[in-house]
Length: 506
Ligand code: BG6
Image (cartoon, protein in one colour):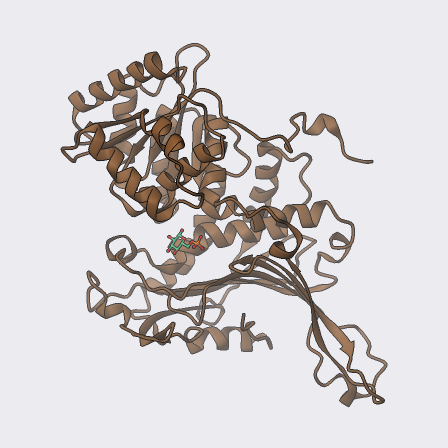
């Protein structure tokens, strides 16, 4: 047919297996390592996608032996891995575990790390290929990458690679993001820096591109002529749990809108890429972010809130200000909603409403494309009273799939038209379960396959969009309280009501 093989020389249906390599994990005691990175490594090994000699080096201040580190990984895998525990896989994998103890500014520890990396190459045949995963606060990035450089770890030998993986927050505003990028740039060439936005690793998020660009029925109506507005929602029922240290002062907008939601918006709004490779995809996403603007009145086009006590999953839960580690005077928002305009011919006049919050009614992430009403309805007014706007809803999680909402005649002798839904559910169409986002992304790092990683221009453009909102809120004092278990503050409803619209109740 019309696929162009020259654009994608690799057959992506074949299992992609990483070549000889290893990983050094900084921040082994953190939540991210335990809940996501370690289980994903085991799951990859279990699926046969890691090389037999794959090696994992933990680096932390703890006074641990290799076995202690292996025990930590073991516990993390037992608790959080998605695939069954198999002794033979574990035994082979854990033979490649090493632990290096030290502070980030400890030269002797980095010398030890260098020796460990060399030994692993001799012993397990890693080929000297190493990914350095910085699951640590960004304030330490400078020290760690400086040490990697200093001790010769950042520079690959001939036919080797060295890559660095960083996690958000990529700064807390445009300026700090630039500084971070500068720190990384000084040590690693841009092609060796992998910024993880785990939303891009989600199957349903990648499917936005498949849906848009592999079909012919969506693209013709994917523009301001037909689309009224777009709602992007990432709602969580959980509170901040034990993450007060990270979350207080960061808040919902920096935690989720700056990265996950603006990336989702870019995928929904972008033009067709020339090819499905990193460069082409990033160029198109970047154009969307560069053309995004905020409407002039931030008072009425944004909303923020902070959860108070209420109910979640049938249990009484405490308010944000009563959570462990949160100051009673904290003005950190746990709910954020913003309006973004994408100033292009395709999207002129179509607002993108982005919202996220903790302790909301339920956990759901979705993108809803809401269409304009039909220009003319040849029915009596009473026949269409119950008809709302057509919508295409991409259900990112938890119930992965897509829903199309349109009007249909209610059976009977009278003409009465009501909304109905047509559903596609992943579970009903495919037998394979989606891989966890981290599995996909870690494998991509080891393969050096960058399409799913935002590059620094995208990160900076996203801060450019968000910075004025944060500055505006900083002048406003406390966010509006909302009860846990509800759908956020009333200002969020007013924000849409002013435009004659309402939020979907997912
Ligand atoms: C993270 C945020 O990036 O995403 C968390 O820091 C949030 O606050 C998490 O809970 C949600 O991820 P997921 O994949 O469960 O939607």
